[in-house]
Each structure stands twice: as C-alpha cells, then as structure tokens.
Image (cartoon, rainbow, N blue to C red; front, side, top):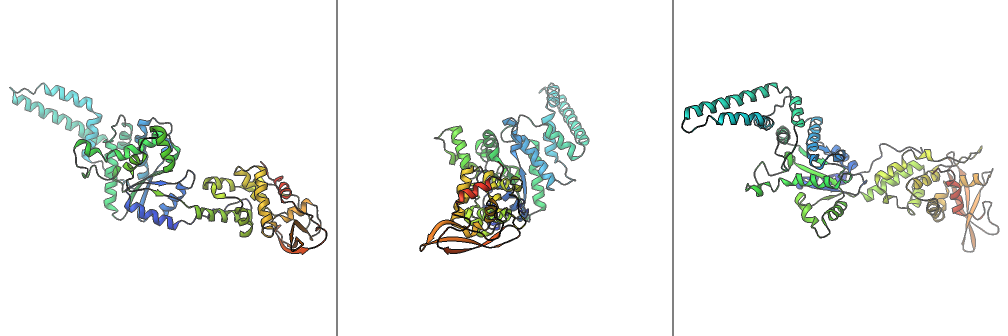
Length: 466
C-alpha cells in the first residue's frame, strides 16, 4: 500500500463546475485564472466530462508553438482548431465548401492568372467600340468561370481541399478574413444549427507556459474583430462582426491573471493600464479557480493512503507542515511511486517497522525540505501528539534499540502533577503499527529512556534516500 496512489481518488469539484457553468452562460469571453500548476487542466477535464450534454470543448495548446514566429501563431491555431473539430465530430463527411468561399480562395490563390486575364481583356475595353468591349468581357468571364469549375472539379474530397487551404496560409491581416476562417465559421454555424441545445466552447490551454509575445498576440487577434466595425464605419451589430471568433459561443483563456498582469507591466511599463487592456477581451470579469480547501482534503486523503497512517497521525503532521503550499502537480509527483525512495530497518521474528513515517519523510524530501527541516516538522508532530504519531514510530524505535521483547516504554521527560508521563506499548500489529497507552510514573525513566524525537527521526531519515 505504501508506494501507490489510488487512480480513482479525485478532488470533489461538482460545486465549482456548477459555478463555472453559470459563468460561461453569462461570459462569452473569459479567463480561467489559477496559479501555475494548480490543476486548471485537471479541472477542465472534469468540467468537460460533467458538462458534455451542454457543451463541446475545443481545446487548443499554444505551448506547442514555442518555436513558431509570432506572426504564424494564429495560422497554427486555425489548423489545430480544425483538427479538434474533426476529432469532436463537428466536421461531417458530406461537408462541401460553399461556393462563395471556394471562389474567394480561387481568386486569392490564382491572382496572377486573374491579373493576366484582366490586363489582356482590358485592352479590348474601348469606349468607341462597345461591341468589342462586350465580347472581351464575355470572354474574360467565361475563362474565369472555366478555371473555377476546373478547380472545383479537381479539388477532390474535403481533406484535399483543406490541405490546400492549410498550405496556402501566409501574410494574413490581423482580422484573419481568409478562407480557412470562413470554413471554420461555416462548420461551426452548421453544427450549431443541427445541435441547438449544445454550446461550442473554445479553450486555450497552458497559456502560462508560452512566450509572453504569443499570449498578447492571441488575445489581440481574438478581440481585434470587436472593433473592426468601428474602424470601417460598419455597425458592430453586424452578424459578421459581432460575437466570438469563428462563431463559437465561448472562448476561455487558461492562465494566472496576476502573473499576466506582471508580464504586461514588465512589457509595456508600470504606468500602462492593464485593466483597460484585459477588459477588451473579458469585459464581464474572470473566473478565479481556487480549490484550496478541497485540495487540502485531497492531500489529507492521499497522505493517509500513501503512508498507511490514520487520520490522527496525518493531521498531526499537517498541523506542522502546510502541504497546500505546493501545487497539485508538485504534490502528485512527490507521492508518485514514493515507496522506491525508502528502505526499512531489518525486521525481527516478531517485529516489523511501519512504513508510514519513512514515507512521510521521503515525501518531505521530495518537496524540497532539508534533513533538518524534516526532522523539525516530524519531531514536533511526534512530541505534540505522541499517541497518534508514536503508533507508527515505536517499532522503528524498538529496532534501533535492538529490543527483543514486546514490552517497551518511553518518555519525553514531561511531567504532570509531579509524575513523569510515560508511553507504554499495549499491542503490536502485523503491519508495524502499535497501540499505546499513557501512564504517570515515578522514579527512574522507563526502558526506552528519555526519548529525543529528533534522534528518532534521524534514525528514520537514514533509510530515506536523497
């Protein structure tokens, strides 16, 4: 039991997911904010499973674009979004690229032929010869129509067409008014018409882990089209401009908002207005994700499992050391296969050491605590709750002293009403745990002597590898 972690043990988060669901309904664009490593991805996976009847989550991982040039980032996003949509079933096999999009793409990628035709035929447009001009125009239109039809005919299936679209992405404007964006919009719009009860949520994961310039590029592109109408005198209520990028119902950016603010002020200066900038993207507020209390309970349950100690002993240690100062990721890596980091004293015919305090010491070492710090934490727990913690330390104390009988007593030298407080082994269990009882003694110290908790912990740490 000592070195394994229950794979089914998870943090209960139904309440937080319910709050997130309500938040999404009123926040088309939002930020899911939590400290780096606090389990945002873990939370999103749980939310996706819980809310799958109402949402389809399309997840993009910009961390994969670390080596990309800044101007190429959004091209990768569109590519990955298309792959996500394939994986989530948002692209039907029967999908046909609309004629207006195909025409746009054809003209864009055949502009040289287009220009040659125009230049050739424009020579025929003479005001003094309207018949010749008309014939020339007709010839031009027929030529372009023939080329377009050949393009459509030879385009092959959807995959081939999309491959050509993807391969053709370069030098786009900030508003991304290109064919692949139009296809994504059309696909999402079509899917939503067929699934009226479900929402499409676009999620940008692991934004804490990418280059700051990439973060701001993504935020800028997502929010830029909001002002597009004002720039060109078009009503912002236009269906082509209002709403989210690609026509999704929600966009969620996952990062630590406080860290983002520090980055922003570092990049643009301490006097710049971060709130004004971020409100352009998320003007209705953000969703702060904090599971501190639930995380504490999760750590508590996992510590009981991985050490094999009961709640009183684990609580005694947690009263001396705040495990929640570490992220879920750090904690998970610390408990993963931790049993491999310890050895145990040689057992005797009737005595086997309990693994609990050895495992606890190894966990603290994995979390970066020094030998002195580990001794201090665990010895305080032992001294302040000898009955609870001692139940898992006494067998190692007996082995250290090479005691060959089950009778064992020890004391910390405490006095109560003029008597020495002594702890006596009442029973020893097969896994090395003992039951203790407290006595008030007079006279000489018991067989175990005046115990020093630090020395007992030093003995245990000798079996914990660095």
